[in-house]
Structures are given as C-alpha cells and as structure tokens.
Length: 383
Image 1 (cartoon, rainbow, N blue to C red):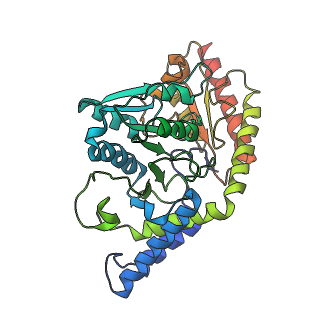
Image 2 (image 1 turned 180 degrees about the vertical axis):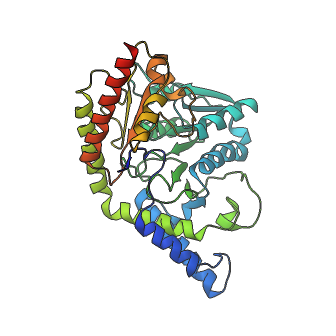
C-alpha cells in the first residue's frame, strides 16, 4: 500500500487527463498554427482550455497564455515586467517566503542592479498589507507576492495589498504566484487588480510541463524567448496540445467539483491536526488560517543529530511519501521557515504533508501511527 501525501510537490494526473492527452497524441495531433482542419482542431482545444481557465479566474480568455511551467510563468512575469518598463523604477518588493522560482529570479535582478525589498511575516506568522505598502515608493516597478506559501500554507493578503498598492501607485505592476493557491482558496480577478498571475498544471491533477500566465489587457512584457508568433509572441514555441488537453480535463474537474475538493482538504487538515496533537513531540508550524491542503510540522528530537531525512527515509520504506519542504529546495535549509524565525533544529526536522482529492482518513491514520512509531524508535536509539 502506497500513501502519497506530497501533493504540494506534484499531484497524480487524473484519469480524464491521461485519456485526453492520449487522444490528443492519437487524433488531435495537428499544429495549432496550421490552417488545415487538423490544425484548426488543435487550436479549438486550446481555445476551449483558455475559456475554462478564464471562467475559473474570472478574466477574459485572451488574457491567458500557455507556458511550459509555473517557473517559466514566474520568470516571464518578473524579467518581462522590468524589461518592458525600464523607466518605471529599479525597485522590486516581494515577500521573504517566495518559491525558489521567484526568489532566485529576484536574486538575479539584484545582480542586475535592482533593489529588492523583502517583507517578513510578523511574530504571529502572518503577513499584513501595511508591511508591503510601507515598502512601496515611486521607484517601485513591481510588486510580486505569492497567494499561498508552498511550504507552510500561509495565505498572504494578496487582494487587499494589491488593491491598496494600485490606488497609491497606479503605474505599479503587480504579480501573483498563485500556484499553490489556485483552486485551494477563493481567487477572483474581478476583485483583485493583479496584472500578472502564474498558474501550474501539475499542482491540480494535470501533467508536469504545462503552465499558464494571466496578463491583464494593456500590460506589456518583454519576452524571454524569440521565435514564431505563438501565444501572441509572448511565449513563442509550438504549444503542447496533449498537455493542454490534460490541463483542460483537470480544470474541468475543478470547475465541477472544486467546492467538494475544498471541503475535503479542510476535513483532512483538521483531522490530521487532531491526530498529531496526540503526539507530544510534534510541533505544528502551519497557522490555523492556512490553506487547507497543506500542513507543515516539525519533530525536533533532542540529542539526535540529523534532519527530517531520517523520517522521510523511514516512512518511505513503508510506502508513505511526504516531503521535508519545497521539492525545489533539494535538502537546503528552508529560507521560508527561516523567515518565520524558527530555530535551526525546528527547521531541520520540518515535514510537509499535503492532501489531494483522493486522500483518505485511513491514510492519515496510518501516517500518524507510523510517525509515532518512528519517533519512539528514534528516542530509544538516542537513550
């Protein structure tokens, strides 16, 4: 029996998506830019997917562009924004807990002479609009802020922050990394005046290799790639029709069952919190107000030298799969948990559990009991 609880890293592709990708490779295999019927058929599939995503985001289909990943969407947003508006300023404001695809892009901007201001959470572990707004100046060209943190699940105050920021600085460009938040918490572009929004397919039951970027009408981006005129030249390169077909099916599931999935995530989160409160060695890092699909904990064992890898390996041998944080960090000390002011020991022993639409309470029971057994085993070894 395998128990997969690492859905923030990636989700299992839904059966409907697998079937749609196979059908696209077998029948809808034309190039969407071709004018013959096979090309028109492929382009129709892209149009359908754009319309479905637009309904979920509450935007216009023509404001959506397909990319190869959320990393590409984030990089295109950051570098494309500052490249398109060089006279708007040399300062960028962000949170201190961004995903590596944003944080490392920010570091590159710093090397190019931009000043990056990072906003940290307060002592309660939460972010407040005032802390972002206080960092904005007429020289700020871009505000980039994630919707939900990928390690702890903290929900950042995106709507209020961007609304107030735009009121004070109308020329300011605002980007949202919505990868972990899309379909997990309410997000309505009719109410949030964001200019750029990044989406990922493989976090919502679609395959890896497909992402999307919302670019509000009237906003320009300097492209990162140069080639044909696909995606209006913003992201040239022949679109991956099979991946987009699978993405369409994943979006369809969310469109039809999104509220049901949300209730399931909430139930899983609450249930596991209650189970882990029975284990005195466990510290829960995720605030109660976090996004429902993720729960971050630490199991610091006094006298035990090592990291969360001890638990990852032990659980993995028993078919239980979780992570020690962002899958993109590859074992490095989490800059996210450091930003929250946690001790190094607490950070080293951090574990992230994340739920899917298919997660069961039985699986969570097995995880909790197995974790408790491993804690007792390791404590016995220490003694």
